Amino acid sequence: MIKYFSTEHKSKEVSFKDAIITGLAPDRGLYFPDIINKFDDKIFDILKFPELSFEISKLLIEDAIPENDLKKIIFDAFNFQIPIKNIKDNIYVMELFHGPTAAFKDFGARFMARVLSFFLSKSNQKITILVATSGDTGSAVAKGFYKVPNIDVVILYPSKKVSFLQEKQLTTLGENITALEVDGTFDDCQNMVKEAFIDKSLNEKFTLSSANSINIGRLYPQSFYYVWAYNFLKNQAGCKEIIFCTPSGNFGNLTGGLIAKRMGLPVKKFIAATNINDVVPEYLDTGIFKPRPSLATHSNAMDVGNPSNFARMTTLYKTKDDMKRDIVGYKITDKETVDTIKNVYEKTGYLLDPHGAVAYKAIEFYKNDNVENNIPMVFLETAHPAKFNEVIKDNLGIDVNIPKVLKEALKLEKKSIKIGNRYEDLKSFLENR
Image 1 (cartoon, rainbow, N blue to C red):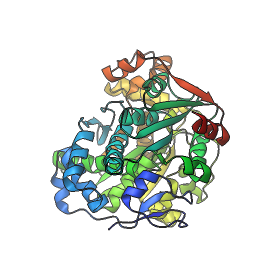
Image 2 (cartoon, helix red, strand yellow):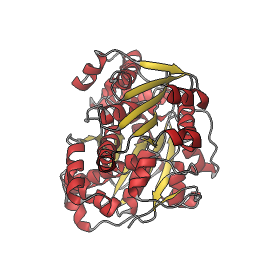
Image 3 (cartoon, rainbow, N blue to C red):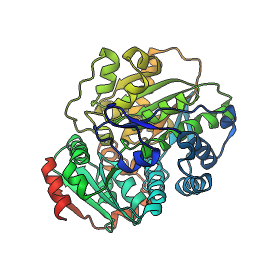
Image 4 (spheres, rainbow, N blue to C red):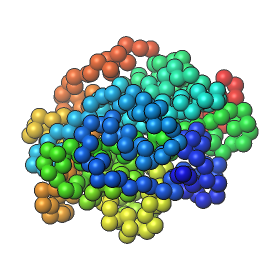
């Protein structure tokens, strides 16, 4: 049976069930599996995403959930399309924004909500989920856990640092979803959540869990679509290996890809594309990891100055040189982001969101630095561009067509509670609500 250890190595190993329910280890480490099972080559012939996800999840969690129940969870969670489109030459986009909140976070949130509901239904236990968001995590978690029995969700987001549409999505549901508007940055929100998990007095009153990518249950589904992209291009173009470019903030999305590679996915290189919050590309250059306060950018979901999942990355790779064999990092400025949206739209007709633009520009840098033999290069488009209509309209004069799922959110009334950026502010709210 797979056991989950803390990246701080100061807490006891736990089961998958305990890891997903508690979220963060008592020593503030992130849970990680002691075994990553390998694929059978038959996995690469599966061309339907739910079936593929089911086979991968069986390898990741083994018998933690009976197969019939796991299959129901997977097929219910992933009931939307994942288009892969050629932009130009050997550059492809994988669109991950066709779920109910138009962002890639739907994959992790919907899977985790159903898994937690399965476990809680067996014990009648009640939990409170705390989640910090710099953009799309909050809306995906809110929608994924909306009205789920025995689960209350408290979302912390930085005031005036998420887009209008993102804020509408995460603040308008009500019921078991509460949005806390924090006077600070995403890093403040994340630190407040982490403090709550290690506060003994608070944990005596509540069973707390996390739905950020610090939770292994949120992370696992982000490995599924990397295999999906390879299988699609293997079938369409006969490729034998692939390069991925992942727009990266808290680095959960990239870590999902690294897990897939450890399972046997033939990835030649991962390109970690960041905005000016570039602590991981800086580490890859210097070997020094220097967290710092995050800076606001157009690609706000990546505005992270101390990425939590770096702890998992350094568990997979013991040294910087080990990591550099698989990962290369590039930093993209806001000007480069806007210029890329404009250039790609004018030349190809494809409209990128700011996060996808960061990834596309990083691919251009990578191609300038490396001689490629036409290996498919897939960048992850993580959110619908309509979520960033302000950036796109202000800088390019383009009005983005808003999909139905986002139009519905615009009609709803914002309901948020403003709090300060100290942990005591969060604790007081939880104890007195």
